[in-house]
Structure formats: structure tokens, C-alpha cells
Image 1 (cartoon, rainbow over the protein chains, first blue to last red):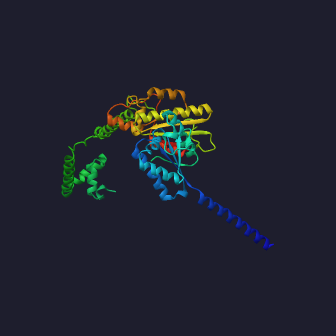
Image 2 (spheres, chains in turn blue, green):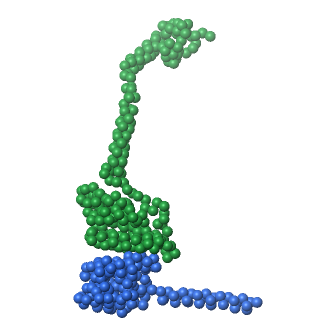
Length: 149
Length: 244
């Protein structure tokens, strides 16, 4: 009888250990979710924002971060400045390589008469979202922390 | 027993001088006094003493009656206190609602519909826009985006609530004197009851002092005590936050 009880207890403890183990595995894989908001035209400010994001990655590590950048209104011009500004261009390329996701507001492009294929540096169809502000709200509801640099 | 045997003490003489003896007792004592020269002298001295004491205390003035003056200081303080309270009351009342300011401390969410956090389970999207930018073109962009979004949600039949909270440099859009979008804001407010424009009272008070003018807000605008406090509160309640 005692042997059976002991075996049962050991079994329970092992199962609990497994549970905890898988939890910590989840935690190691869970990432810090952040959404950066850019809606301003000023080139200096746009360059600073891209630098902020790179600093964030440098501090925490790309594998620990899930970074989205939502651009709408006057902020979409960063992809136009990239054609002429080397700093902006190189920062955009480097961030994309580190899996930073850029989301561009389709509504803004329509209002400003911008064709993403020809007018915006490196923007693909998968990066478009119907509405920038709606996307910001949606991401926050999904647990993304909001930052406007 | 014979009266002659009763010793004539000073006390007896005092009592006689004070008129405490009957007529017969007085007569007897008097006879004894006349018969005794020493006794006569004692009686004379005591009588003189009595008379001089009486004389000394004859003209003592009555103590002054201060009854009316004792009450006066107390009444004076009461009147002074009442006056101070009256002035204080008028002052406080005046400043609580100064002339010309619309006291529009509206309780946002009186039905508490905005209190539930906007979680993934909830079907209502809640967004608070935090406006601190004085640029009227930026304000116009904001109104564009809000109008498009509200229209989309209405078309889809999805629930959404939007608040635009203006404070600091962002208050201009909500002031009659500076807003370039007065008609537009009026039309949006009319068309969408789920859209609220909010002005920060701390900013209003500060500007009134700095500019020295009454701050006139658009009629659609609600007033909250503190803009920053309100946006923090909304975030805690689960609203999405967007800085303009």
C-alpha cells in the first residue's frame, strides 16, 4: 500500500515539474511586444525614431522583441525620404533584416495619392493595413505597448 | 441671684452697646457702671471704639457695577467673527463659479459603459486620442482619420467609441478663437454620438491667466479636470491610446 502511495506521489510531482518546465519554456519564447507610432514628416525626427528602435533592439535583443512600426498621415514620407537620405535608407534596411514589421496606412496612401509600389522605398503589399489608427488600437488590444518617439 | 454677681466682661459691655440687652438689663448694667469708676472708663473706651469704627466705615463707596461692560467684548468678537465668515463665504462662492465660465464638469461615461476594459473578448473598440499639437493641419488630418474610421465601423455595424482629449498646445482646435475646424467638429459630433471632444480644465485655467481672456470653447466640447489624468485613466480602463 505504501509503495503505491509513494509511486503516486512521485508521479504527481513529476507531472507538476513538467508543467512548470513547459511554462518556463513558454516564458523564454514569449517576446516583448511593442508598437512604435510615426505620423510626423520631419526628417530629423523620423531618423531619430528609427535610431530609437535600433537602440531598443540593441538593449534587449532582436529574438526577445516583437516590434511593429505603424506609419500613417505625414509619417509615410519616411519611405519617400529613404530614396534621397542615406541614413534613413540604411536604417530601414537594417531594421527589416532584424524582423521589424512596418505597417503602412492604406487610407493615407489613398488620400495622398501615393502608389506604394513606386513611391515608397521597400514597402510591399503585405505591409499595408486598411487604417493606421485602427491598427494601433488593435495592436494595443492584443497587448502591444504603445510608444510614440 | 443678684445681678451684681454676674461679672461685667467686655463681651457683656459690647453686647449692651450693640443694643442686645432688654430695658431692665440695660438699667441694671448702667447702675453698675455708674457705681464703678473703672467700669465707667472701660465702657467709655469701648463706646468710643465702636463709634470710631462706625465712622471709619461710613463712607465706603459702592463697588462699581461692570455688568454691561463685561458683556460688550464678547458681543464685539461675535460680530467681528460673523463679518469675517460672511466675507469669506462670499469670496469662496464667487470663485467657485466665476462669471462667464461655463461650468461644464460633465461626468464622462455617466452610464459607465466605458468602464469595461476593451479586451479581445469585448466587441467595442475604445480609442482615446491625446492631442497636444497646435498645428491645425495635423488637427485636420486627425479629423480625417477619425471620420473614416467611424464611417467604416458604422458600415460594418461594429461598436466603437472615440475620445479626443486636448490639452496644452493642443487646445486650439477646441477654441472658437483658434479652431480651423469648427464646422467640421460640429458635424462630426452631431453625426457620431460615440465621438467626444474633451478639453483639459488645467490648461484652460492656465491660458486664462497667461492670455488674460476668457477661453471660449466650441459648444460640443466637454471639460475634464485634468487631461493627462484622464488619458491615464482611460488606458487603465483598457482604452487604446494614440498620441497626436
